[in-house]
Length: 80
Image 1 (cartoon, rainbow, N blue to C red):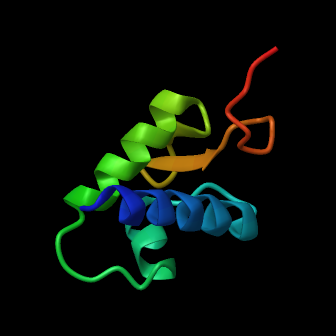
Image 2 (image 1 turned 135 degrees about the vertical axis):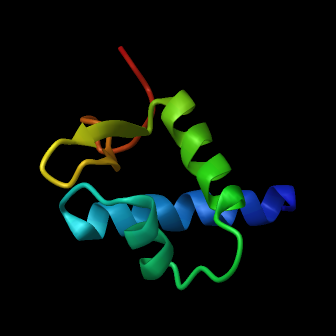
């Protein structure tokens, strides 16, 4: 995945999570992005967003899945 393309995917993932208003599974994010094919590049983008502190990866015990949601500060990734 090209650098520019990864940046675009990051932006779109944040938009999807913001508009959803609830935590989403990888498959739900992929569906919203109309992602086709291998999910590994999308998972790498999500992992990067988690490392940056923009997105949280948390367990959903009812669904028995890990879900992703924006971090509390609206996804800015900055900490005071």
